[in-house]
Length: 306
Image 1: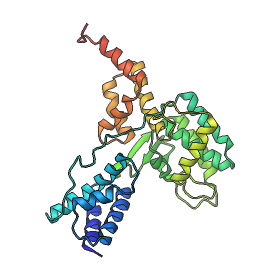
Image 2 (image 1 turned 90 degrees about the vertical axis):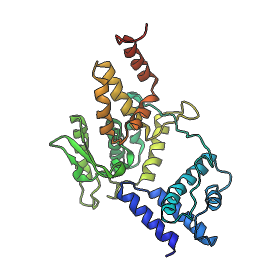
Image 3 (image 1 turned 45 degrees about the vertical axis):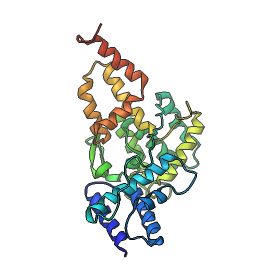
């Protein structure tokens, strides 16, 4: 093992001990070390970092900037061990962050997605995706968390679901509405068949855990079958937007029932598994209806300007 490859293993181990998963970073940095070794380089230099980051040609500047950002983290680690290693400066590949505009699903659209599961070929597949879409819509879970659930993570008696190994390796317990518990219990009666060897909560017809790529591909089919279309070039129906929609609906309910919005927001952050409340604010900033309600409450505040 080369010194660079050994240093990469140490870097990943340290970062993972802090709670980072780094699956994508491990893949990219492994490719970067391959690039340096082929070039006969034992020291990380800005020139080679920039040359690798801008591969392949024809990609967007944001793509290149993201690759260089991954290298920069590794370079900081190397530079602390040996100042001969260079750290690519910030702004070397300037790029504005570009986030997709969330597609906020209405209740009717969520019902249409769940009804669209009827077009799937096998009964168990229909049940799996109907239950999965429903669970994502009413809990705001990340799709990776949902398909990573184990059979034992559901506690029907307590009406709770344990999400293990979320972001930064943290776990959390989600209280569920009785109707959600009933839906999951009905699914589990179908799921618990003799040929099911996996401990996963959601399983395929073969009894294996649902695969992320297959879930994404199937969801695109459901979107098409449900007749959901893009609202703009940057706003298309995505699976992750069920999470956005849950967050917005939760805060809309808080405003409409006259609840303490300030108190409910940190509870929402915890329920969603956000480490930083800024992530929750991003989810909410894309909803014009929510911003209008917030502005209306501000206008009614005794200290508001007239």
